[in-house]
Length: 419
Image (cartoon, rainbow, N blue to C red; front, side):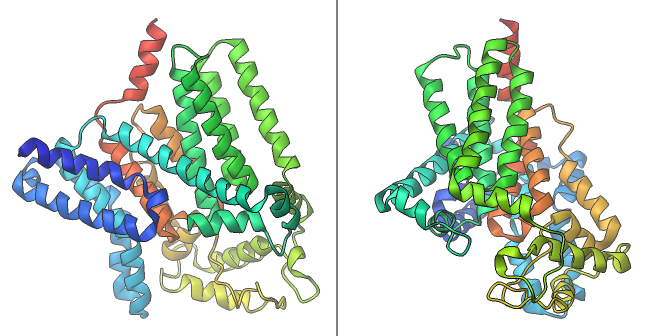
């Protein structure tokens, strides 16, 4: 009975990892079931009695982001907004709390299985989307793709239900895990590694197609690091670097991606105004201008979580640009999590946030470092923690990496180098 109970608990933990194909509602339901089972384990096995002083410190730090919201609740006039904050970010409390308290009942290989479940779910999602695209006619869809009708991006977004910069991060992390498996394998030329390369190609071509630029940059940067760190063979390095050049070439060939790259080079640092059409507006420049203006006067204490969007919108109202996608029709957040934290809590809040992010960095787990790097880069251009998919991705894997006792990845490196 005891073994069955613990197995179920670990299976539920692994099930959460396939959230890319579960969708938001099913993922939330799975997390609720997991949390209830965690409480069951906590009381039946009395795991609360095993909490050490070190566990207590870890809990304080890893749940601090959520409790900052709880404390801010008192100062937010809009109770509906405050409640949404608390509900959306509950994973910042649940995952570190229950994983640390119940750490002795989470199997050492649960992290490994969760990662593979995550990878397979992304492969299934990408395959399903491409089946839809091919069934409609790839050439026809690409021909119809333009600024006002980004068909490829719309299909990926609508089918997955995931904001594309976030989807890019999920696909890139999966690709890097597959690349890690190739680099760690004893026999580089094998059918299994061929399948892994095809899987990476599928995921990364998808990222190119829906043009998640920062995710693509992260993949190239981390991949080069892994290749030069994990292999000394010149031939293997040349093969992989050639593959990267091919990927970069694809970026400039695929129409949907080429348009997004052209946008970067053609964008001008001009504030949105009535003389511009939609394709000429540099929305991010307008956003960062307002964010920096607010920060100049509130960099020490911030303006509070309930006032950030309100003050941004007030600043946006000064722009004369008016269209279907202007700042009054669409809610544009700060598009930078570090700036967002500074706007909410000031510079000391930002310092606390960085401590929270880097708390587990002293581990020797290379893959954990890769995970954190992808998150840190992603936070530069997106408020990753403003959407539930970003919250679940970070809190689930961050907590699981943090409590993982057996470092399978480092073991595989050591055994490989020993030979």
